Length: 459
Image (cartoon, rainbow, N blue to C red; front, side):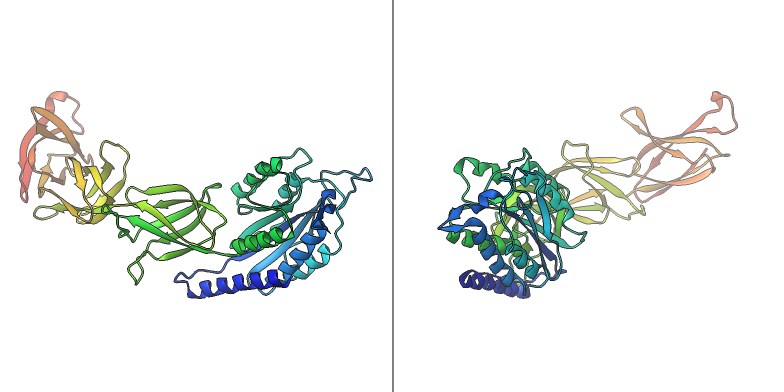
């Protein structure tokens, strides 16, 4: 009908304008919409003095005319309940068929098929949905959408909800749309678990819902992610964000958060069909689950992500070529990050424990990171100890601390001379020649390491 056709054309024109003016550029996805249409015997029922099947066929035909000019769109049609007659005793729970596969001329073929349908069979919804997994040819950059139109509940003991979940989990399709045509109130809840459900009561409401569903199926809406600082402002940025399908947990989008030229978090085009989980890859990461995107609106997702900086410094000269520090959340053993010295890294505000991989290792606990503040951690300048032995042997270096020896390092048994970078302190080296077979020939020597100084240790 002209009103529906014009309405959908207006919506599609708006989408083209949004796409052209978006600040985000990406490879255009192909959208594939599979209409799964109920042609069971109950579709012979009357709506406003007209047969439900005729109303559905006519309005779907109008939709085909409106969608035909749209780029990167293919349509297909699967019908169930139209091949075997219940009245003739031919009830079949496998009465479903892909009448129009995806292709360039699917719009005209669907219109032709709709004109020849006659309802006469049963309602194998679960089986029909399950068969759709074979209806979508392999495609690496496609949005696969199912729009199920039905006026009756499952009649073949299948579980349409379980099938719909499996299709999403396996990445076959996005969450289906379900349009009910005059369903009884007591069975409506059985459809809500399949996908986004809309109930219609007459031709006018069916036309309106069909328009809304098509718009949502075709439309990316906009989302703004606010990374909130400690003062409650969305000032944090330059963070990678991953959007996951809340149901299948599949990765859907990766974006690097950006403040646009107006000073606001830049908008992101997202598919409103899905429910999302989002992870902002801060240190540590922050996440939010079960995010519902409202179609046709500008959505705002807020994540608390206050951050400050940690700068690792060394007093004097850094003799280490690749000194690293293990950063952990306070009181936890899990490694959060391995940070290089002379490097400044951003962390979520809070307290952290550091394990610095010097010889001996240094531990700095309860380091506080504040909003937009750089916390600097300094360690002493190391010294250098050169260990010289009469020959190759078993040689170990120990730190003397609190009247105890702490093992620090084993000198290579393949050399009789080695230079080791050590933090300031009192040490002892213990040596025995590699070919000596008696413990009484073990020798040891004490030495001291001072910052910036070299020490010769001769055994």
